[in-house]
Image (cartoon, rainbow, N blue to C red; front, side, top):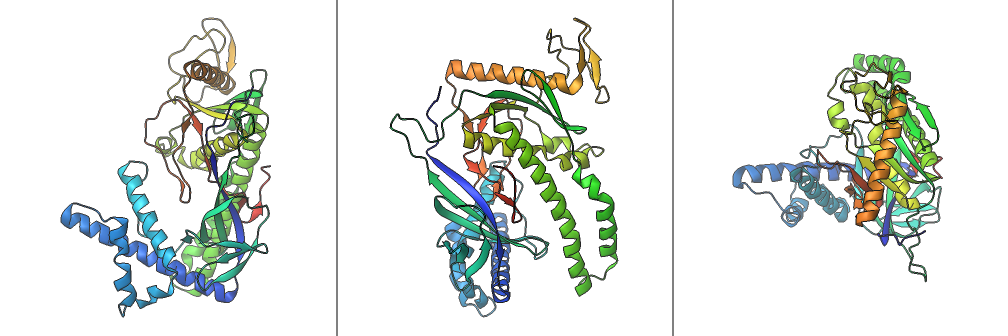
Length: 434
């Protein structure tokens, strides 16, 4: 049975690798510098105004500073920057403030010339003969576009990674065309497996479809590169600050981090695609990762696992295929509940990996039992949702600035992600997502 899909428009980001010429690199570097300077200036003005008046500055009020600054002797170089890049920076700053006051993000920070640099073009970017044409005086930049870009281009964010690679994140909008039967192009499916997933550290994911339990080991990519990373960081620390040698070696360290990130994302993409490809729903726990990393003994391992990113990958891939991601309450006693007789024991320390139910005598593997209970709870929520006609709740996602964390303390919910925020490549290398 198929049901009409709710969203009519689909936003998707495709990330491509850019290969600017030497002249274009200089032009992009100047644009990065102008956008960074304007962000810091506008943020400082907003803070000062708030201290004096108790009120912030609107986007129009901030943009009003730009014309005088472009004419002033000390800052006339701002006029060389494409005007909409600066206006997009203003929009991003006001959005950052809104997210802060809505308690979805931290307070906006000042930008540094060290690390990742980025600018945003809100319009007038075109794809010409497989390359990217940027507005202003930059022109056509050589690119590697590995798949067809469908829909209208909304915004393009050009960035430079700490390792020196140039990327373009192209946000497109496609309209879903309804069929003569009234059903959407991407309907919600009601056939396929329902997976319950228990995320962990020893095993990254313990998955059950109701018939069998599968375990996927945690790759621990950071741990594998830790010795190499430590050695390179120590060598970097011994180099004189500000020297060309230190600046060059920063890229060496950045490439190690990049390799770790690429390996982790490749694993997460492949596993999420494998689970989504034959399922109608995936059920996970609503983990409070930010709170969990406060445990200093486990913080590094939890951060290395990438649970939050994995759930985001599941969300948009399920939405794309017409499936559902169900997040059950993080306080649901999945590990302490017997999946056979539903008897709940009291305490269960983390070092207890197997246990026997004192009520029915069933012997349980901790993680396998938790996955079974998570699946059962998710199916109960799905049945309740269908019975009461509850519509799927959309997740809060920023189309161009990455994901925005929701307020803390959220409960069990259905989650669809109308915006695919992850790129189709990891730093220009096609991923096997399908």
